[in-house]
Image (cartoon, rainbow, N blue to C red; front, side):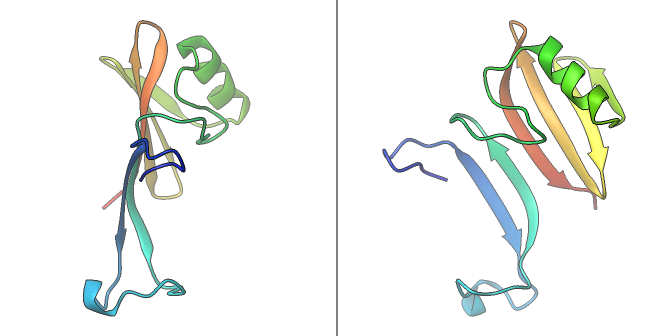
Length: 101
């Protein structure tokens, strides 16, 4: 994904049962497989790149989402999707949303 200034902000992968040759802009059957944000001011579950670890945990707990931390990643599972927040120097550096297969 590229923002309007041409900066790479992440990657998005979608699944379409008809395959890429039949993909259309107005297709309503695409399913999100993975979204990874690396930059930008976009929010996932009310959290964004650059936000502090403390704010992230407070936000997810306030929304009553189950979360756990392993290494430098905070994990949260909601409705068949895993949300992974990578932390470095107490700040979110990337956010990944991935379908639970």
